[in-house]
Amino acid sequence: MGIVKIDDALHEDARRASQVLCRSINAQAEFWMKIGMFAEANPTLSFNDIVTAQLAAASVRVADKTAA
Figure 1 (cartoon, helix red, strand yellow):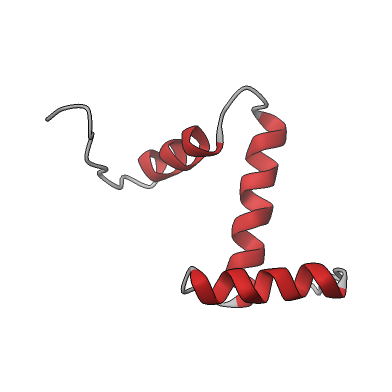
Figure 2 (cartoon, one colour; figure 1 turned 135 degrees about the vertical axis):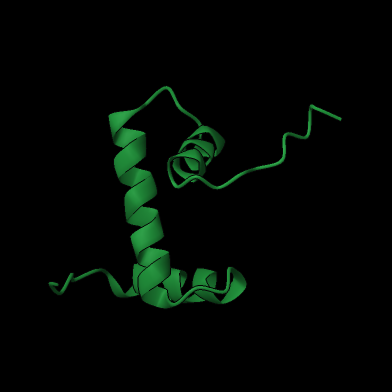
């Protein structure tokens, strides 16, 4: 595990977002990094597409709101 230097303002944004989303600051920063990595590798996918694909890869069943 390494140490990552980030801008103080970005760290504050991660802290605030982590409180809203019930994550640790580290978990919030890791989430943003993962989403950014997937977005760069798959520029045609939306945020929702990326999250849905990651949930499926983790075998998380997500209710389909269109199948009512």
